[in-house]
Amino acid sequence: MKRQPRSRNTYPYDDYSQPRKPNNNKPPSFMEGLNYTIVAICAGIFILGIGVGIALSSGQTISTPNVASREVIDRSAPNPEICVQFGASAIVSDLRVFITLNPFNVYVTQPNMKPGCVLRKNNWSILEQQKLVTDEQVRQCKNRMNTFGFTGTLESSPRIECIYQNDSAGNLFFNRPGTVDPKKTENF
Image (tube, rainbow, N blue to C red; front, side, top):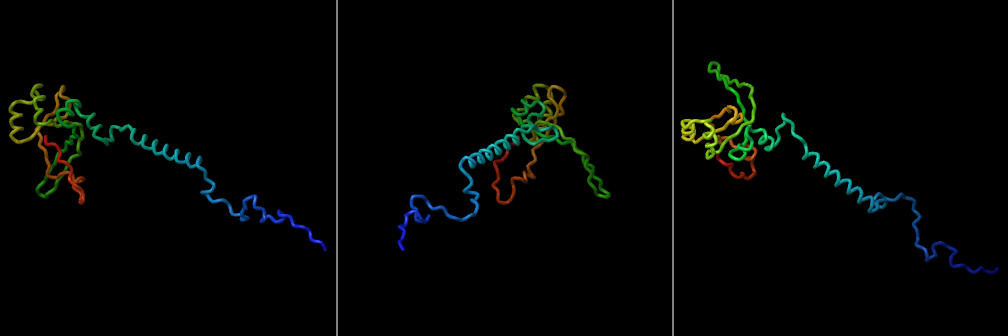
């Protein structure tokens, strides 16, 4: 019997001109299915989402019942331009305390919150020029090392009182263990 000459391409594994393909039927992994375009689109959507979130959270309008920042308090103060330039805006809480001795009890009224202003000692002349305080009131307040605070606008009968700065309690948010005390606040 005569042998047939073998062709070089009879067996597929002998063909070196084409790359060999594995013959496994497993599906491609997730990372193999991604291309750079899809990754770039996903990253762009993620960054856009962060930007929209920041814009929405910082651009919120603050309603009147929600006092959340110093700017809102500054805008609500009586005579805001004078208050910010010559003092500091404040939240004034009016309440009364009733103390009984037999039996000993303390009763507090519901506080009434309103915007106010605290003037620096060197700016009392604003009140004196408009004749809202007398020389006697200025002298007494100065002798006690206090300052003036007011509620209501200066043009329409404000309630002006000699007040003092109480630093005995301090700000307990800053005095937490392990934190460094911030710069002392400006004395009025």
